[in-house]
Length: 388
Image (cartoon, rainbow, N blue to C red):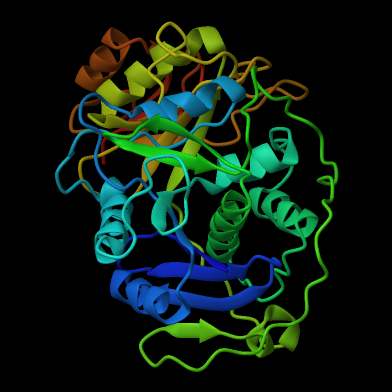
């Protein structure tokens, strides 16, 4: 039997697809696929289950689904699926996921719980990796490295997977393989979508965030190399000969999508509210604040404009101390700051103060205060209001 894993991205980037058999062998890898390609591959390989890293539909009400909230108690945060937000750029990847479920629907109905055979199931690679590892990823442990160690522990040869998206597709497929063996449970409300998880029982408390340690290995049957599949013209199919070890790796691409600001837990709600109001952006993911979150510990939010790909993340940290301005040797420095253009600096200063900012005591003596002013947000991060 085969499990097909699909990592979802918006249309311009394409989908990553990995097929695993029950011996954990990678039998197919496809990159830059479309939902129609996924359906063709499913018809060709006849997988027992298709696991998709995406919700299948919008929430019926509210800003998130029961499935996402159910992950929080053991320390896993997922992007919230709201009611239909319209053509918001941030959610285009979810629409791509909906298209995958739609393309499979007549042959692989949505998984709603119980046996997974013959269904298309929503999965979440971060939850899969954390649950199989038995602990949360350390902050200094890169996510792709952590997830590859989980694949190693389950005897999945990931050498031909060149990107983090390919690794996530493999984790999705591994979730399906384990579910076919009975190692699974599901969280969520079937009326709005459930997430398939590769363990029989869920943790009863928040998992520890451990330092970098090897993921415990499991017993598995030895895998033999799978034969290279036939070529498919419409998509980029990868065989073992194309792997990064062949001496012809594909160069990665990079794009800046956002910046993250740290703050103390008690400042979190004020910082989220301040930057949302100042920039006129909305919160598109994360939790509103400690008073309304259903999980303990760190809090995280993402705010973004109605159009455009760049966003701002805000995260609480128990160790946070504000930077010192002006900088002094031996004291925490600002490291970076925002430059915010305005048509009227004096009015902008008053507006920022009304939202919770303060004017820095020290201002550059060689700059006209009517054209530039250094401000501090509620957590002490300096930013400049300026007029050209």
